[in-house]
Length: 112
Length: 114
Image (cartoon, each protein chain N blue to C red):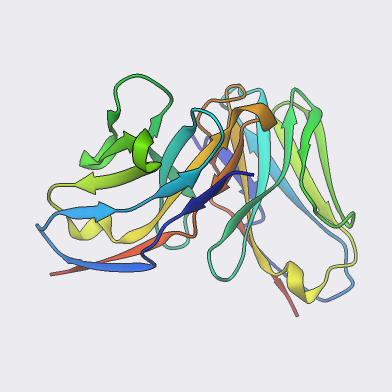
């Protein structure tokens, strides 16, 4: 069974559209994260939730809004997509703060 | 602010040879340190971690890493590389005071020659 699963795996859309990426973990972890990996493979934290509460919110445009309906899910909604949003977005989870993070396989977002 | 530097962007190694990937970090206290591996089109898989204690840590797939506080380094090693080790390797430092945020290095791509 997949521990951290993201959908969709690929997302191709046009500038200006609104899209969502879903993430679910079946590990029983309390903490979930979103990372962005750019075309040069550089990885940067975007958000983190612990027990449905936002604890990390890096300097990300407010077009990006995470939502955690329960501690097993952390979805990422993006409004008014821009060319610079093209990247691979990774979801991760950890048992608690300070514990190793388990990553999903990523969602490759391409903006036309 | 914490930071992680991986000085080598690419490394090419022959199959069966040893491998060492360098990682230097900047962090104000005792860090949590990690090495992750990313195969093409895949997510990141944890190879090993250092939290405290023994400075030589063993990981999966025959990898080990040594924490050297005096050098602010956490280099990854493998004595004999297999073709399946070709991948991108990321070193990361975890910020305990900031919600376990991971700061990653830029990655090192490892190519394995037959």
